[in-house]
Length: 504
Image (tube, rainbow, N blue to C red; front, side):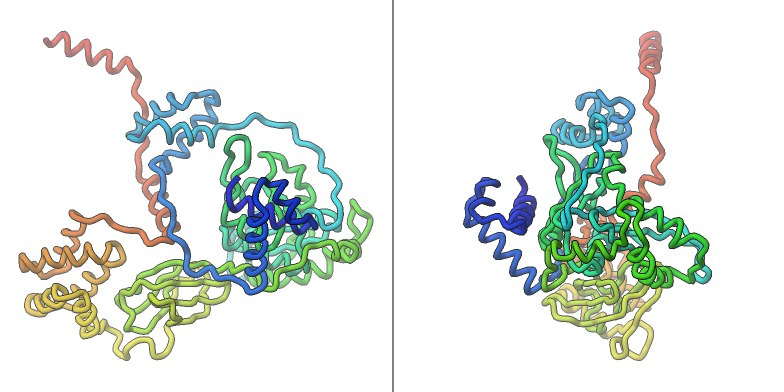
Protein backbone atom coordinates (compact mmCIF):
# COMPACT_ATOMS: atom_id res chain seq x y z
CA UNK A 1 0.00 0.00 0.00
CA UNK A 2 1.48 3.34 -1.10
CA UNK A 3 2.38 5.95 1.50
CA UNK A 4 -0.13 8.50 0.22
CA UNK A 5 -2.88 5.86 0.31
CA UNK A 6 -2.03 4.93 3.92
CA UNK A 7 -2.12 8.60 4.94
CA UNK A 8 -5.53 9.08 3.35
CA UNK A 9 -6.95 5.96 5.03
CA UNK A 10 -5.57 6.98 8.44
CA UNK A 11 -7.17 10.45 8.18
CA UNK A 12 -10.53 9.23 6.86
CA UNK A 13 -10.85 6.40 9.42
CA UNK A 14 -9.88 8.71 12.27
CA UNK A 15 -12.45 11.18 10.97
CA UNK A 16 -15.10 8.51 11.49
CA UNK A 17 -14.23 8.35 15.17
CA UNK A 18 -11.94 5.32 15.13
CA UNK A 19 -9.30 5.17 17.84
CA UNK A 20 -5.63 5.23 16.88
CA UNK A 21 -5.26 1.66 18.14
CA UNK A 22 -8.12 0.46 15.94
CA UNK A 23 -6.79 2.35 12.88
CA UNK A 24 -3.30 0.89 13.41
CA UNK A 25 -4.68 -2.64 13.79
CA UNK A 26 -6.91 -2.30 10.71
CA UNK A 27 -4.13 -0.98 8.43
CA UNK A 28 -1.29 -3.07 9.86
CA UNK A 29 0.85 -0.12 10.92
CA UNK A 30 2.16 1.04 14.29
CA UNK A 31 0.28 3.46 16.51
CA UNK A 32 3.27 5.80 16.31
CA UNK A 33 2.81 5.90 12.53
CA UNK A 34 -0.88 6.72 12.95
CA UNK A 35 -0.06 9.45 15.50
CA UNK A 36 2.64 10.96 13.25
CA UNK A 37 0.32 11.07 10.22
CA UNK A 38 -2.55 12.63 12.14
CA UNK A 39 -0.28 15.23 13.77
CA UNK A 40 1.36 16.17 10.46
CA UNK A 41 -1.92 16.43 8.54
CA UNK A 42 -3.52 18.27 11.44
CA UNK A 43 -0.69 20.80 11.49
CA UNK A 44 -1.03 21.32 7.73
CA UNK A 45 -4.78 21.87 8.05
CA UNK A 46 -4.27 24.42 10.82
CA UNK A 47 -1.31 26.45 9.57
CA UNK A 48 -1.59 25.88 5.81
CA UNK A 49 1.13 24.83 3.40
CA UNK A 50 2.77 26.07 0.24
CA UNK A 51 3.16 24.57 -3.20
CA UNK A 52 6.51 26.38 -3.49
CA UNK A 53 8.90 25.06 -4.71
CA UNK A 54 7.75 22.22 -6.94
CA UNK A 55 9.68 18.92 -6.73
CA UNK A 56 11.64 17.87 -9.83
CA UNK A 57 9.68 15.94 -12.41
CA UNK A 58 10.23 12.21 -12.65
CA UNK A 59 12.06 10.76 -15.63
CA UNK A 60 9.94 9.65 -18.55
CA UNK A 61 9.87 6.13 -19.96
CA UNK A 62 11.24 4.99 -23.31
CA UNK A 63 7.72 3.73 -23.99
CA UNK A 64 5.92 7.07 -23.49
CA UNK A 65 5.82 7.86 -27.21
CA UNK A 66 4.60 4.33 -28.01
CA UNK A 67 1.83 4.13 -25.41
CA UNK A 68 -1.00 5.06 -27.82
CA UNK A 69 0.26 2.47 -30.34
CA UNK A 70 0.30 -0.28 -27.67
CA UNK A 71 -3.15 0.71 -26.44
CA UNK A 72 -4.56 0.43 -29.98
CA UNK A 73 -2.92 -2.96 -30.41
CA UNK A 74 -4.50 -4.28 -27.21
CA UNK A 75 -7.91 -2.87 -28.10
CA UNK A 76 -7.76 -4.63 -31.47
CA UNK A 77 -6.19 -7.86 -30.14
CA UNK A 78 -7.08 -8.15 -26.43
CA UNK A 79 -5.18 -11.44 -25.97
CA UNK A 80 -1.94 -10.28 -27.62
CA UNK A 81 1.07 -11.31 -25.52
CA UNK A 82 3.70 -8.89 -24.28
CA UNK A 83 6.28 -10.72 -26.43
CA UNK A 84 4.26 -10.01 -29.58
CA UNK A 85 3.81 -6.40 -28.51
CA UNK A 86 7.57 -6.06 -28.15
CA UNK A 87 8.07 -7.48 -31.66
CA UNK A 88 5.70 -4.88 -33.09
CA UNK A 89 7.50 -2.15 -31.14
CA UNK A 90 10.89 -3.29 -32.43
CA UNK A 91 9.51 -2.93 -35.97
CA UNK A 92 8.87 0.74 -35.07
CA UNK A 93 12.45 1.24 -33.84
CA UNK A 94 12.00 0.54 -30.11
CA UNK A 95 15.24 -0.68 -28.50
CA UNK A 96 14.17 -1.15 -24.87
CA UNK A 97 13.89 -4.33 -22.83
CA UNK A 98 11.04 -6.78 -22.38
CA UNK A 99 10.34 -5.93 -18.72
CA UNK A 100 9.03 -2.39 -19.30
CA UNK A 101 6.95 -3.65 -22.24
CA UNK A 102 5.37 -6.32 -20.01
CA UNK A 103 4.57 -3.73 -17.32
CA UNK A 104 2.97 -1.38 -19.85
CA UNK A 105 0.86 -4.20 -21.34
CA UNK A 106 -0.27 -5.24 -17.87
CA UNK A 107 -1.38 -1.69 -17.12
CA UNK A 108 -3.12 -1.05 -20.47
CA UNK A 109 -4.75 -4.40 -21.23
CA UNK A 110 -8.54 -3.94 -21.28
CA UNK A 111 -10.23 -5.53 -18.27
CA UNK A 112 -13.35 -7.65 -18.69
CA UNK A 113 -16.53 -5.61 -18.50
CA UNK A 114 -18.50 -5.88 -15.30
CA UNK A 115 -22.22 -5.46 -15.05
CA UNK A 116 -22.86 -2.09 -13.36
CA UNK A 117 -24.53 -2.32 -9.97
CA UNK A 118 -27.47 -0.15 -9.03
CA UNK A 119 -26.63 2.93 -6.97
CA UNK A 120 -27.01 2.29 -3.25
CA UNK A 121 -28.79 4.75 -0.99
CA UNK A 122 -26.41 6.91 1.02
CA UNK A 123 -26.53 8.41 4.47
CA UNK A 124 -26.19 12.17 5.17
CA UNK A 125 -22.59 13.35 4.84
CA UNK A 126 -21.48 9.99 3.48
CA UNK A 127 -20.88 10.67 -0.22
CA UNK A 128 -20.36 13.28 -2.92
CA UNK A 129 -20.11 12.76 -6.69
CA UNK A 130 -17.99 14.74 -9.15
CA UNK A 131 -17.84 14.98 -12.93
CA UNK A 132 -17.02 17.30 -15.86
CA UNK A 133 -19.07 18.24 -18.91
CA UNK A 134 -17.78 20.33 -21.87
CA UNK A 135 -19.92 22.93 -23.66
CA UNK A 136 -19.15 24.95 -26.78
CA UNK A 137 -20.89 28.32 -26.48
CA UNK A 138 -21.21 31.38 -28.70
CA UNK A 139 -20.49 34.30 -26.38
CA UNK A 140 -21.78 37.65 -27.61
CA UNK A 141 -18.43 39.41 -27.02
CA UNK A 142 -15.80 36.67 -26.61
CA UNK A 143 -16.99 34.59 -29.57
CA UNK A 144 -17.19 30.81 -29.74
CA UNK A 145 -15.31 29.01 -26.94
CA UNK A 146 -15.37 25.62 -25.29
CA UNK A 147 -15.75 25.73 -21.53
CA UNK A 148 -15.80 22.83 -19.07
CA UNK A 149 -18.42 22.61 -16.38
CA UNK A 150 -17.23 21.24 -13.02
CA UNK A 151 -20.00 19.63 -10.98
CA UNK A 152 -20.00 18.26 -7.43
CA UNK A 153 -23.19 17.09 -5.71
CA UNK A 154 -23.93 15.77 -2.22
CA UNK A 155 -25.58 12.40 -2.78
CA UNK A 156 -28.06 12.62 0.10
CA UNK A 157 -29.33 16.20 -0.02
CA UNK A 158 -28.67 16.68 -3.78
CA UNK A 159 -27.23 20.13 -3.10
CA UNK A 160 -24.73 20.85 -5.86
CA UNK A 161 -21.91 23.18 -6.89
CA UNK A 162 -21.20 24.16 -10.50
CA UNK A 163 -18.57 26.33 -12.15
CA UNK A 164 -16.98 26.75 -15.60
CA UNK A 165 -13.26 26.64 -16.39
CA UNK A 166 -11.00 26.58 -19.43
CA UNK A 167 -9.14 23.38 -18.55
CA UNK A 168 -9.42 20.11 -16.64
CA UNK A 169 -5.81 19.92 -15.38
CA UNK A 170 -4.84 19.20 -11.78
CA UNK A 171 -4.72 22.83 -10.69
CA UNK A 172 -8.16 23.64 -12.12
CA UNK A 173 -9.50 20.41 -10.63
CA UNK A 174 -8.12 21.17 -7.15
CA UNK A 175 -9.25 24.82 -7.24
CA UNK A 176 -12.78 23.83 -8.15
CA UNK A 177 -12.84 21.38 -5.26
CA UNK A 178 -11.74 24.13 -2.87
CA UNK A 179 -14.52 26.42 -4.13
CA UNK A 180 -17.10 23.59 -4.02
CA UNK A 181 -16.29 22.51 -0.46
CA UNK A 182 -16.31 26.12 0.74
CA UNK A 183 -19.68 26.63 -0.98
CA UNK A 184 -21.06 23.55 0.81
CA UNK A 185 -19.41 24.48 4.12
CA UNK A 186 -18.09 20.99 4.77
CA UNK A 187 -16.69 17.77 3.30
CA UNK A 188 -18.40 14.42 2.59
CA UNK A 189 -16.51 11.36 3.82
CA UNK A 190 -16.24 9.95 0.29
CA UNK A 191 -16.28 11.51 -3.18
CA UNK A 192 -16.90 9.37 -6.28
CA UNK A 193 -15.09 10.00 -9.58
CA UNK A 194 -14.74 8.54 -13.04
CA UNK A 195 -11.32 7.30 -14.11
CA UNK A 196 -9.75 10.64 -15.00
CA UNK A 197 -5.96 10.71 -14.81
CA UNK A 198 -5.91 13.48 -12.25
CA UNK A 199 -7.59 11.03 -9.82
CA UNK A 200 -6.43 7.54 -10.75
CA UNK A 201 -3.28 6.66 -12.71
CA UNK A 202 -4.19 3.05 -13.56
CA UNK A 203 -4.49 -0.40 -12.04
CA UNK A 204 -1.95 -2.80 -10.60
CA UNK A 205 -2.66 -6.28 -9.22
CA UNK A 206 -6.39 -5.62 -9.50
CA UNK A 207 -6.24 -2.39 -7.47
CA UNK A 208 -6.54 1.24 -8.48
CA UNK A 209 -3.39 3.36 -8.28
CA UNK A 210 -4.49 6.83 -7.17
CA UNK A 211 -2.65 9.96 -8.23
CA UNK A 212 -0.41 10.87 -5.24
CA UNK A 213 -0.94 14.59 -5.85
CA UNK A 214 -4.69 14.24 -5.58
CA UNK A 215 -4.41 11.86 -2.61
CA UNK A 216 -2.45 14.59 -0.81
CA UNK A 217 -5.29 17.01 -1.58
CA UNK A 218 -7.94 14.54 -0.37
CA UNK A 219 -5.94 13.88 2.79
CA UNK A 220 -5.79 17.60 3.55
CA UNK A 221 -9.61 17.73 3.48
CA UNK A 222 -10.09 14.32 5.12
CA UNK A 223 -12.20 12.55 2.45
CA UNK A 224 -11.65 9.27 0.65
CA UNK A 225 -11.68 9.35 -3.20
CA UNK A 226 -13.28 6.38 -4.98
CA UNK A 227 -12.76 5.76 -8.69
CA UNK A 228 -15.60 3.93 -10.42
CA UNK A 229 -15.17 1.02 -12.84
CA UNK A 230 -14.91 2.00 -16.53
CA UNK A 231 -18.13 2.85 -18.34
CA UNK A 232 -20.35 2.93 -15.28
CA UNK A 233 -22.22 6.26 -15.49
CA UNK A 234 -25.17 4.89 -13.48
CA UNK A 235 -22.97 4.78 -10.38
CA UNK A 236 -22.70 8.57 -10.48
CA UNK A 237 -26.14 9.28 -11.86
CA UNK A 238 -26.80 12.01 -9.30
CA UNK A 239 -24.13 14.32 -10.66
CA UNK A 240 -25.04 13.33 -14.24
CA UNK A 241 -28.61 14.47 -13.60
CA UNK A 242 -27.24 17.84 -12.53
CA UNK A 243 -25.76 18.38 -15.98
CA UNK A 244 -29.19 17.81 -17.52
CA UNK A 245 -30.37 20.84 -15.57
CA UNK A 246 -27.32 22.77 -16.81
CA UNK A 247 -28.21 22.09 -20.43
CA UNK A 248 -31.96 22.42 -20.09
CA UNK A 249 -32.22 25.37 -17.71
CA UNK A 250 -28.96 27.19 -16.96
CA UNK A 251 -27.72 27.48 -20.57
CA UNK A 252 -30.82 26.96 -22.71
CA UNK A 253 -32.21 30.14 -24.25
CA UNK A 254 -29.69 32.44 -22.59
CA UNK A 255 -26.85 34.59 -23.91
CA UNK A 256 -23.60 35.38 -22.11
CA UNK A 257 -21.02 38.03 -22.94
CA UNK A 258 -17.97 35.94 -21.98
CA UNK A 259 -16.94 33.14 -19.56
CA UNK A 260 -16.75 35.60 -16.66
CA UNK A 261 -20.40 36.59 -17.22
CA UNK A 262 -21.35 32.89 -17.39
CA UNK A 263 -19.60 32.16 -14.08
CA UNK A 264 -21.28 35.15 -12.42
CA UNK A 265 -24.72 34.00 -13.58
CA UNK A 266 -23.99 30.42 -12.45
CA UNK A 267 -23.36 31.57 -8.89
CA UNK A 268 -26.76 33.31 -8.89
CA UNK A 269 -28.45 30.29 -10.49
CA UNK A 270 -27.13 27.90 -7.83
CA UNK A 271 -28.71 29.92 -5.03
CA UNK A 272 -31.94 31.03 -6.71
CA UNK A 273 -32.78 27.90 -8.71
CA UNK A 274 -30.71 24.82 -7.89
CA UNK A 275 -31.05 25.14 -4.12
CA UNK A 276 -34.71 26.21 -4.21
CA UNK A 277 -36.41 23.89 -6.69
CA UNK A 278 -38.15 20.73 -5.46
CA UNK A 279 -36.01 17.76 -6.46
CA UNK A 280 -37.78 15.04 -8.46
CA UNK A 281 -36.18 12.13 -6.57
CA UNK A 282 -36.43 13.43 -2.99
CA UNK A 283 -39.57 15.54 -3.19
CA UNK A 284 -37.81 18.26 -1.18
CA UNK A 285 -35.74 21.35 -1.86
CA UNK A 286 -31.98 20.53 -1.76
CA UNK A 287 -31.37 23.45 0.61
CA UNK A 288 -33.88 22.03 3.12
CA UNK A 289 -32.32 18.56 3.10
CA UNK A 290 -28.88 20.16 3.28
CA UNK A 291 -29.78 21.85 6.57
CA UNK A 292 -30.23 18.35 8.04
CA UNK A 293 -27.06 17.08 6.33
CA UNK A 294 -24.84 20.03 7.26
CA UNK A 295 -23.92 18.74 10.74
CA UNK A 296 -22.81 15.37 9.36
CA UNK A 297 -20.18 16.85 7.02
CA UNK A 298 -16.50 16.89 7.99
CA UNK A 299 -15.28 20.38 8.98
CA UNK A 300 -13.14 22.40 6.59
CA UNK A 301 -9.46 22.88 7.51
CA UNK A 302 -8.40 26.24 8.90
CA UNK A 303 -6.42 26.89 5.71
CA UNK A 304 -7.40 25.77 2.21
CA UNK A 305 -5.08 23.59 0.17
CA UNK A 306 -2.49 25.61 -1.77
CA UNK A 307 -3.52 25.06 -5.40
CA UNK A 308 -0.97 27.42 -6.93
CA UNK A 309 0.98 26.32 -9.99
CA UNK A 310 4.73 26.47 -9.35
CA UNK A 311 7.44 26.25 -11.98
CA UNK A 312 10.92 27.33 -12.98
CA UNK A 313 11.50 29.82 -15.78
CA UNK A 314 14.49 31.67 -17.29
CA UNK A 315 14.21 35.47 -17.49
CA UNK A 316 14.69 36.53 -21.12
CA UNK A 317 17.18 39.16 -22.24
CA UNK A 318 14.50 41.88 -22.11
CA UNK A 319 13.69 41.14 -18.44
CA UNK A 320 10.44 39.20 -18.86
CA UNK A 321 9.33 35.82 -17.53
CA UNK A 322 7.09 33.67 -19.77
CA UNK A 323 4.04 32.00 -18.25
CA UNK A 324 1.49 30.27 -20.46
CA UNK A 325 1.10 32.69 -23.40
CA UNK A 326 1.95 35.90 -21.55
CA UNK A 327 5.14 37.54 -20.23
CA UNK A 328 5.66 39.30 -16.90
CA UNK A 329 8.42 41.81 -16.07
CA UNK A 330 11.01 41.44 -13.31
CA UNK A 331 13.73 43.90 -12.24
CA UNK A 332 16.29 44.07 -15.03
CA UNK A 333 19.09 42.89 -12.77
CA UNK A 334 17.58 39.39 -12.91
CA UNK A 335 18.05 39.04 -16.68
CA UNK A 336 18.76 35.37 -17.57
CA UNK A 337 18.35 34.21 -13.97
CA UNK A 338 16.44 31.00 -13.32
CA UNK A 339 13.47 32.11 -11.22
CA UNK A 340 10.50 30.40 -9.56
CA UNK A 341 6.99 31.40 -10.66
CA UNK A 342 3.95 30.82 -8.45
CA UNK A 343 0.66 31.28 -10.27
CA UNK A 344 -2.63 31.49 -8.40
CA UNK A 345 -6.03 31.97 -10.03
CA UNK A 346 -5.61 35.74 -10.10
CA UNK A 347 -1.93 36.61 -9.56
CA UNK A 348 1.61 35.79 -10.70
CA UNK A 349 4.40 35.82 -8.10
CA UNK A 350 8.07 35.65 -9.19
CA UNK A 351 10.80 34.60 -6.73
CA UNK A 352 14.58 34.80 -7.03
CA UNK A 353 17.02 31.94 -6.45
CA UNK A 354 16.78 32.53 -2.69
CA UNK A 355 12.93 32.42 -2.90
CA UNK A 356 12.70 36.16 -2.13
CA UNK A 357 9.74 37.80 -3.91
CA UNK A 358 10.96 40.02 -6.77
CA UNK A 359 7.75 40.69 -8.75
CA UNK A 360 3.96 40.40 -8.38
CA UNK A 361 1.48 40.79 -11.23
CA UNK A 362 -2.21 40.40 -11.92
CA UNK A 363 -2.57 37.21 -13.95
CA UNK A 364 -3.44 37.77 -17.60
CA UNK A 365 -5.93 35.48 -19.39
CA UNK A 366 -4.50 32.39 -21.05
CA UNK A 367 -4.11 33.04 -24.76
CA UNK A 368 -3.95 36.83 -24.42
CA UNK A 369 -0.29 36.95 -25.58
CA UNK A 370 0.41 40.19 -23.72
CA UNK A 371 3.33 41.66 -21.77
CA UNK A 372 2.78 42.92 -18.24
CA UNK A 373 5.41 45.48 -17.21
CA UNK A 374 5.62 47.19 -13.82
CA UNK A 375 7.12 50.69 -13.36
CA UNK A 376 10.81 50.72 -12.45
CA UNK A 377 11.56 47.21 -13.62
CA UNK A 378 13.35 48.17 -16.82
CA UNK A 379 15.64 50.95 -18.07
CA UNK A 380 13.96 53.82 -19.89
CA UNK A 381 15.60 52.83 -23.15
CA UNK A 382 13.73 50.04 -24.89
CA UNK A 383 16.73 48.34 -26.51
CA UNK A 384 18.85 45.84 -24.65
CA UNK A 385 21.20 47.25 -22.03
CA UNK A 386 24.60 46.20 -23.43
CA UNK A 387 26.45 47.18 -20.26
CA UNK A 388 24.15 44.94 -18.21
CA UNK A 389 24.61 42.06 -20.66
CA UNK A 390 28.39 42.41 -20.54
CA UNK A 391 28.31 42.40 -16.75
CA UNK A 392 26.15 39.30 -16.89
CA UNK A 393 28.61 37.60 -19.24
CA UNK A 394 31.54 38.57 -16.97
CA UNK A 395 29.73 36.96 -14.03
CA UNK A 396 30.39 33.60 -15.70
CA UNK A 397 34.07 34.00 -14.84
CA UNK A 398 37.23 34.93 -16.70
CA UNK A 399 36.13 33.12 -19.85
CA UNK A 400 32.92 35.18 -19.93
CA UNK A 401 34.85 38.44 -19.70
CA UNK A 402 37.23 37.30 -22.47
CA UNK A 403 34.32 36.31 -24.71
CA UNK A 404 32.58 39.67 -24.14
CA UNK A 405 35.81 41.52 -24.95
CA UNK A 406 36.21 39.47 -28.12
CA UNK A 407 32.67 40.34 -29.19
CA UNK A 408 33.41 44.03 -28.65
CA UNK A 409 36.40 43.76 -31.03
CA UNK A 410 34.87 41.53 -33.71
CA UNK A 411 31.12 42.21 -33.82
CA UNK A 412 29.31 45.43 -34.68
CA UNK A 413 26.05 44.20 -33.08
CA UNK A 414 27.64 42.74 -29.99
CA UNK A 415 24.44 43.23 -27.95
CA UNK A 416 22.62 40.73 -30.14
CA UNK A 417 25.44 38.19 -29.78
CA UNK A 418 25.60 38.70 -26.02
CA UNK A 419 21.84 38.20 -25.68
CA UNK A 420 21.73 35.11 -27.88
CA UNK A 421 24.70 33.54 -26.10
CA UNK A 422 23.37 34.20 -22.60
CA UNK A 423 19.93 32.97 -23.60
CA UNK A 424 21.44 29.51 -24.15
CA UNK A 425 21.17 29.08 -20.36
CA UNK A 426 17.51 28.34 -20.94
CA UNK A 427 18.40 25.15 -22.85
CA UNK A 428 21.75 24.09 -21.41
CA UNK A 429 23.35 23.75 -17.99
CA UNK A 430 25.63 26.61 -16.97
CA UNK A 431 28.68 24.30 -16.80
CA UNK A 432 28.11 23.24 -20.42
CA UNK A 433 27.80 26.89 -21.50
CA UNK A 434 31.07 27.82 -19.76
CA UNK A 435 32.84 24.87 -21.43
CA UNK A 436 31.53 25.99 -24.83
CA UNK A 437 32.75 29.55 -24.19
CA UNK A 438 36.21 28.23 -23.29
CA UNK A 439 36.36 26.38 -26.59
CA UNK A 440 35.16 29.43 -28.54
CA UNK A 441 37.73 31.70 -26.85
CA UNK A 442 40.51 29.19 -27.53
CA UNK A 443 39.78 29.34 -31.27
CA UNK A 444 38.86 33.07 -31.19
CA UNK A 445 35.38 32.33 -32.52
CA UNK A 446 33.53 35.28 -31.02
CA UNK A 447 29.93 34.90 -32.17
CA UNK A 448 26.75 33.35 -30.76
CA UNK A 449 26.26 30.89 -33.63
CA UNK A 450 29.58 29.17 -32.90
CA UNK A 451 28.76 28.74 -29.22
CA UNK A 452 25.37 27.32 -30.20
CA UNK A 453 26.96 24.77 -32.56
CA UNK A 454 29.47 23.70 -29.89
CA UNK A 455 26.66 23.09 -27.41
CA UNK A 456 24.60 21.17 -29.96
CA UNK A 457 27.55 18.85 -30.57
CA UNK A 458 28.83 18.43 -26.99
CA UNK A 459 25.95 18.94 -24.57
CA UNK A 460 22.48 17.60 -23.93
CA UNK A 461 19.64 20.14 -23.71
CA UNK A 462 17.95 20.19 -20.33
CA UNK A 463 14.33 20.69 -19.41
CA UNK A 464 13.46 22.69 -16.32
CA UNK A 465 11.76 20.56 -13.65
CA UNK A 466 8.23 21.77 -14.37
CA UNK A 467 8.34 21.91 -18.16
CA UNK A 468 5.92 19.00 -18.70
CA UNK A 469 3.55 21.19 -20.72
CA UNK A 470 6.26 22.19 -23.20
CA UNK A 471 7.51 18.60 -23.34
CA UNK A 472 4.03 17.31 -24.20
CA UNK A 473 3.63 20.04 -26.83
CA UNK A 474 6.92 18.95 -28.42
CA UNK A 475 5.74 15.34 -28.48
CA UNK A 476 2.45 16.39 -30.08
CA UNK A 477 4.25 18.31 -32.83
CA UNK A 478 6.58 15.37 -33.43
CA UNK A 479 3.62 13.03 -33.85
CA UNK A 480 2.07 15.43 -36.34
CA UNK A 481 5.12 15.49 -38.60
CA UNK A 482 5.99 11.79 -38.31
CA UNK A 483 4.98 9.69 -41.30
CA UNK A 484 3.50 6.36 -40.21
CA UNK A 485 5.43 3.39 -41.58
CA UNK A 486 3.38 0.39 -42.69
CA UNK A 487 4.74 -3.07 -41.91
CA UNK A 488 5.87 -4.93 -45.02
CA UNK A 489 4.52 -8.34 -45.88
CA UNK A 490 7.09 -11.15 -45.47
CA UNK A 491 6.60 -12.13 -49.12
CA UNK A 492 8.44 -8.93 -50.09
CA UNK A 493 11.59 -10.19 -48.39
CA UNK A 494 11.14 -13.69 -49.86
CA UNK A 495 11.02 -12.28 -53.41
CA UNK A 496 14.10 -10.15 -52.69
CA UNK A 497 16.05 -13.19 -51.48
CA UNK A 498 15.08 -15.26 -54.54
CA UNK A 499 16.22 -12.45 -56.81
CA UNK A 500 19.58 -12.25 -54.97
CA UNK A 501 20.12 -16.01 -55.33
CA UNK A 502 19.42 -15.85 -59.09
CA UNK A 503 21.98 -13.04 -59.50
CA UNK A 504 24.63 -15.17 -57.77
